[in-house]
Image (cartoon, rainbow, N blue to C red; front, side):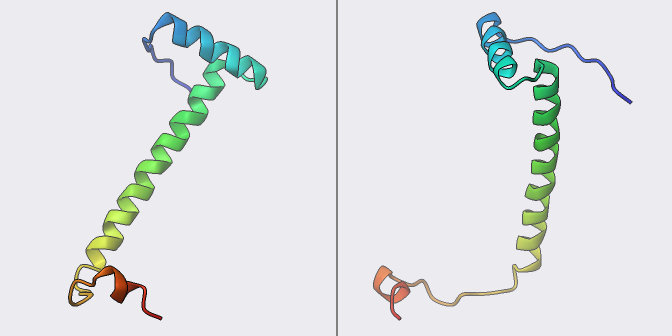
Length: 73
């Protein structure tokens, strides 16, 4: 179900965004929906990363290593 929302932004930015969207053969509405979808998915990825870090919190690397030690082969 598509719902309408009202947003506010600087008029010049809106005009520039419309021109850019038009160059991409899209409407500003479509560009916003694409952005909103990426924004929501990005949040999930962030949560997954945080969960992964929690699961791995028991792992200890040991001492702090200096640059030479890190680059040893």
